[in-house]
View 1 (cartoon, rainbow, N blue to C red):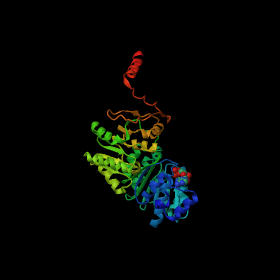
View 2: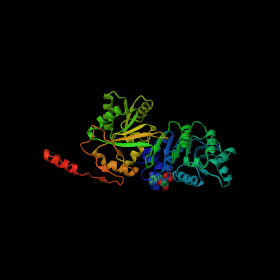
View 3: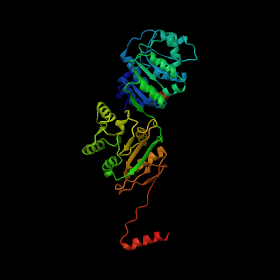
Length: 416
Ligand code: AMP
């Protein structure tokens, strides 16, 4: 993937090449097109993921392309950050990425004289990076007006709340125009952050690029060993036997997704799917149907489900284990949020033992195996451990021939 394919204009692409950025990071790949398209974004991304460029690049492009003239003391885009250090750092990034663009930007934070900041604002700014306290000071002194603000970024939102900026933030939000694009970046998503996001963002694209590498303890996780070809049958069996309600099911391939949906529908179970062949609107429709309870089962591939706002589910089923262990954490994270209990069940066949071992290493736990009577596999799933070792089981002893050997074994056991 290239920066050009994200829809960035030539001057930005050239600057990035000069800076030695060759490929977009995952958060950039997801956020840039969405921001360019005008969507709100809620991203779980820590420092080091390239999050700054993820919002800076599309904002610089939009400010350039829209070319609105900024009135005195006005700003068109506002980036709020928790500390002066971050304010400087983020502003430096805007300066670096926007080096060839004709934009006016500045930075404002407390602890230094307010006058030079006021002077800069007098002519108006395309973009201002600020800490919340100083921004409010400037606003109260009429040095900055918000009516031209079309884009708001909250960077490191969790730290802003930790540092006690909640009231300042609320005051800023209240003074901003309602019609705007809002981008929220946070390393963690506490209830407070979620509440803030719920209030501020409109139909945001959720992006998560730094999975916590341990799964939440409240989620009951277990695996059912099964032969590959019997997975659909086992799924139908468990669905009925365990009276599963709404289930999000992850399948490795698009073809696999379609096959499972066909099986479910053939059994009269309302199921829908999201995978890479479906355009985004169709994926969203499927998601809406699922959320509205019109589809009981939603079958998805990892790629298609990424970035979609699906969580707080009672149950996630891994019909296939993911190729990348981190995706297991992503998938299970969609159940049992906010203190609710959740369950993650994986149907595992012998071929998947390497993926299973990788998941157990990453999540630092051995997943409990629960055999389903009648579905015990012919091809055993080798025993794994959290050191990533696949403990090869000794070959099953050949079936004894004739009664004599049976007796011999029986005798041995009897002697113990
Ligand atoms: P951030 O997560 O925004 O703090 O960025 C972390 C570091 O990654 C910064 O030093 C950026 O200059 C650098 N960086 C951001 N995006 C890219 C990229 N696509 N390629 C190479 N370096 C990058």
